[in-house]
Length: 494
Image (cartoon, rainbow, N blue to C red; front, side, top):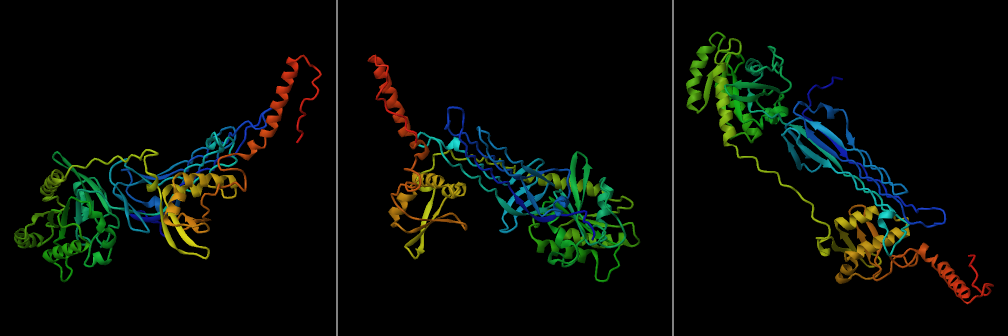
């Protein structure tokens, strides 16, 4: 199977790394059986981004892999060791690359400037360890938060050559010869149709004006509908500031003449769309052939009457090339001056934490009736993120989730909307988690302790109280001069 040398459209998947899980750890030292939580946070997952490299001319590198995945964040560890961040992936693309969501068709980015960067998918956030979750009410959490999954998206990259002038015309009209004659580009040139299979780009200097010229593969009638190679390469002239029709004066094909060729190519450009405002120049090529100059003299008045600027040229003898080069420079310079200045890119600043109103953080809708009552659906960035961070095999973590949900008013809103005990409450999208609504229930009481407390510390309090009672009795007896220490409370061996 032949390996392609030029690829201008690819489709593949980009996946960001998952965040590392937080760590549950209790610091243990001699004489300190419960020295406090010291579980570290998980690292964030790596992201995938695209960066423009002007040295690239093809998307061939993406033709070989169907998925690009960034590294996951490392999990946290004890002794307050945080997990490492997953390594980002930066994919280099040519200037003129359009990034599109392959499933929805939404254009995500149009990358034209050198070193311009677009972050396609963002890595998941790492979960907090139990050290970060400790508070005055929950001194030694027996749980940590899970890392979030990274984004994943199917991407289509489409390359549209960035050039000032696009050369269009029938196969073998001399477009490659023209770009070779006026620049240092060295495209493949041969005497058979469709020699050019990929767009060629050349840099031209005319006086003080420097501009680029793109040689687009030959067009034929029906190119906009998929005939020949035009369907694949018409998009490469979308960014051109001007169009030069290269007309073959030496063709012997029946039914073809310069006027008909121009009309046919213009019809294909119109069918493709979006090029109506580009100025046109007409280059009548191969005037060095027998009878070609006579043909040019015949058609030139008619073309000029139609509003075209016409330049008889010969890429073989260089006749008329200087006049065409300076005419192209004049058109390009005028177009550049007429283009509006680039608007400054908006700076997107995240909203400060805590500014959002509680009622704006989630929405609740009633979806119908279930077997045991109504069914309610909760949507919102925070609740859905908290669901993904929760380890549902840990009852204390579930209690912490209930605390967070009630803190932003979900329970109060459900009661306000008419929810009753036993109704089903689903939080999330397709993989929603469903709860039985139990209003005013102190979550976790039947499993661990009252919400916000740590039962492991509670079990130590009776022993601590007895130790304090014994110490007080000892000091009282010593102050009274009684050193027999009889009648002191005994230690609880349990």
